[in-house]
Amino acid sequence: MSRRTPQHIAIIMDGNGRWAEQRNQPRLFGHRQGAETLKKVCLSSLDLGVRYLTVYAFSTENWKRPRDEVNGLMGLLKLYVTKELKTFNKHGIRLRFIGNSEALSEDIKKIIHDAEKNTKNNDAFTLIVAFNYGARDEMLRAHKALYRDGIEAPDEAIFSSYLDTKDFPDPDLMIRTSGEKRISNFFAVAVIIR
Ligand code: FPP
Image: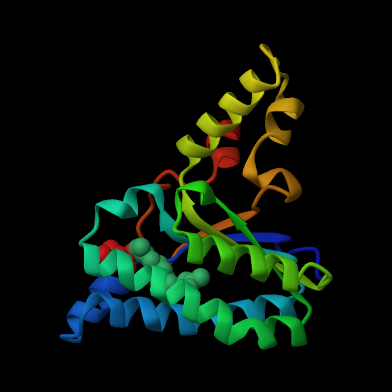
């Protein structure tokens, strides 16, 4: 790894809908294309020596989208994880998920659980999928868990250990594929260090 290679890249995968609409295609066509591109980005990042890639695949705000689009994104996750499991294992890619999985359907919970379990011994690269993720929700869940554990005034290290991102280094580079410059409730760590 060169000194300039980021250890952890975070990507807000947006612009898919607009990209599809410009081609007179349904928005889901753009998301599907995004998923294809993600595979290439994953393998290239691995080749370049990046160790962690976090992708914002479904935010806590995305529930407000039309039902068809929400269902389509759920279906895409199922398809992607099932279809690419072999690729992940072949390249030593570990899959981890961040976000509020409790609120997801049972079949998605199972997909997430199985994908994490089936790739847990892979150590070349970690693909972190932020799914039903929002930084505010992450902080709120951490806050509730701290309260549950009787910790009233955590220091930064204790607070961080209650975040979904506790096992990963902070991202060094954040990319928003549409080119916009907003954080959109992505990454509690980025919000805290700002
Ligand atoms: C937001 O931008 C993007 C999403 C809500 C979904 C991104 C998801 C994928 C690319 C699916 C692949 C990921 C996995 C892990 C299966 P938008 O495209 O709606 O933005 P726009 O409306 O601004 O164009």
